[in-house]
Amino acid sequence: MRIARVLKEKGIEVKPSTVRYVLERYGLQGRYKRSKYRKRRRFYDFDALYPLSHFEVDLKEISEESITHASKLNIPPYQWTFIDVKTILL
Image (cartoon, rainbow, N blue to C red; front, side):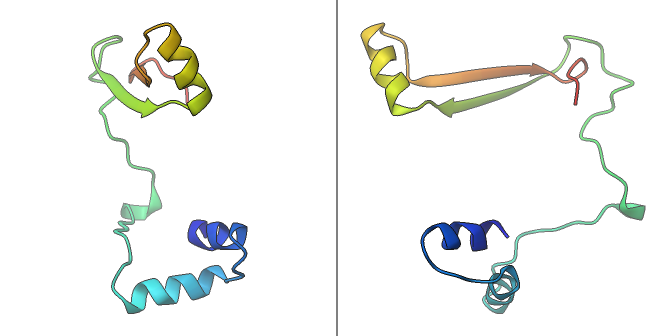
């Protein structure tokens, strides 16, 4: 559905089912693993973790406007995100 939406934004009208068939034909289907009994699998054992004991880290580039502002202040053009796995609210 995402590929069909991106193509639609670029002016190419394609149904999501057509994209799916083309991906399957060329063997480009991504990995999909259905969990047992269709339950959501968790990445961590939350009962065994203590608060502030395990973090997820993310690094991404920031926008061009922020880069020009950051270069004036000698700040690197990246954004770091640290999330505590136990105390995050989803």
